[in-house]
Image (tube, rainbow, N blue to C red):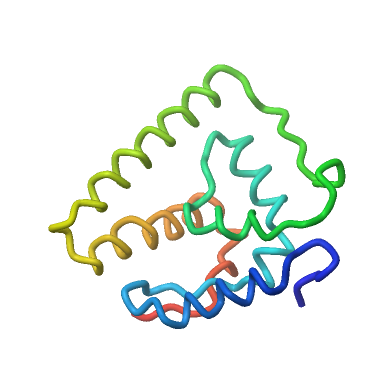
Length: 137
């Protein structure tokens, strides 16, 4: 159950509705799990030099708790981790431009970009495989 004290439940419900109507994506996110583990995932990912999947940006915007209460401890910012993050963001930007082309079909946009980021995240951090509620094979 999503903690309504810390999360804007209307925002999360809107994301759930968007998932229901996004036929191009093979993934339905488990927002209960994501909101419960969001800051742990964020911390784990950034400390490993990995960025969160793009679809999680909208989840992060639903956080309404106090900034000083965010349970993140970003400690591992050695030069290698910083460089990996820089490359990850650059790659994401390139992919966004690639799949934003008007002649690219929507299935390719979602499957190749949004869904792949989530699958890659789970591959790197299998302890968070529950972020996917269901998947179409």
